[in-house]
View 1 (tube, rainbow, N blue to C red):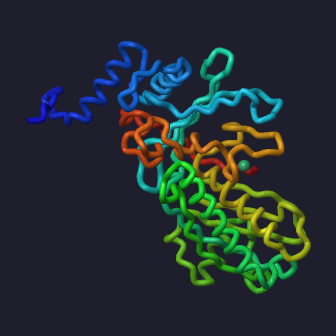
View 2: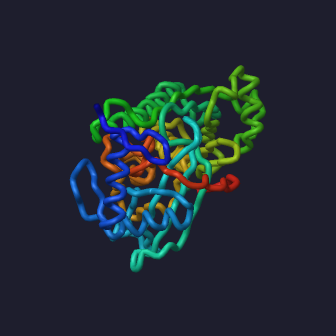
View 3: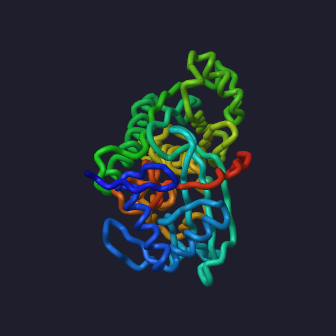
Length: 328
Ligand SMILES: [Zn+2]
């Protein structure tokens, strides 16, 4: 008969008991036991774990830490960054972020907010403003190919960490809007929603509203409007003629890798990069900070893990911070 530990009158399964025992051993010796192997707990890991407890009342035994001594080739202030996604629904989750000074690992910043979960199927409704000058006849083929390429990158990443299925996949619905016949203000999500409704789109079925606005008369960047669940990408390269394959890929990268990552809670200072080579492939930041790696060694990426970062996280839920507009 399998022995069952009893804690406070609650039956605890052997697996849970083993995990509790590991945690007790770790707490007593300052070491962590992962997959039965006793290993010295990294001093930085222990410091970060303690900080999550102090700052947020969260138990994060195996935190996700990004520490780049080269600071991505940037001259600005270097920070060590740790993130924890926990709780929420299949679509939304609570994110906590801690920033540390590399010299003494003192907490120098923190953030807590409710974000779009960087996991699973994300339904995107795309309003593509069809300027004749920049959106050519082959735009549908090139744009959908660029979108497929983004999804393929997520599949490739999953394969690289031994998973069959991608952690994130985008389900896209593209609606072309003629700026001449349908009066629309592309930078106003309400106006775009109205134009999409006139075009017959069902807005409630989507997680993100994306506006692709390659206006030949403008030169503007992109932004994520978290309060509107909206992404806008403008004419980032001052295109004056129909976009080719590479140009559409650049638009897709700005929309799905950069602006989308802001909806997942990413900020530019998580992992700055100033050199020519981008260390995260197409992604905006290190996969570890988005929960896309298996930090605690249980075989499941943290964003998909029922016991993320080494244990079920218990504690007060972070008080959500009102979403803000970002322009970058
Ligand atoms: Zn940005």
